[in-house]
Length: 138
Image (cartoon, rainbow, N blue to C red; front, top):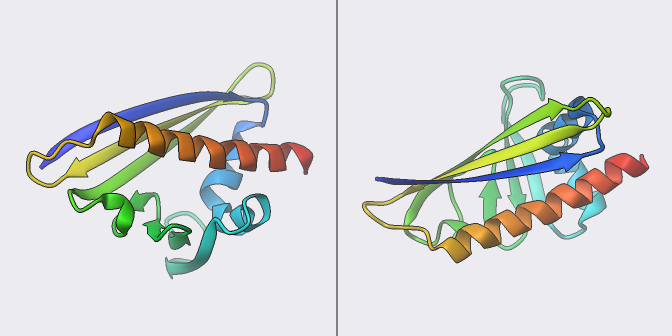
């Protein structure tokens, strides 16, 4: 199995705890508000919504997201899974720095083309900015 990583760091005026809640805990309820049509459904697979809960969030364009992408068209037939780890670090100005590290676990010696990784980062950036704008306004 091959492994590729991609890291994105974004500065945000939103406090770390609020951004973490919006992106990691409430994404299934916020996405329909900030990007209508971006989410098809969500269900809790395990847990009560708190720490350790496993959610299955089905986004538009036929792929599945639950902090690890384990199924769907986005895997392109040669990726076993994509795992994304988010870190939100408070900054002195009251905002935070958000870091996203995505790990692409490929089948055999397959390599994810750079343009696919860049596209995924761009799409994640659109979602991030939409949620950030919502959190700033609310």
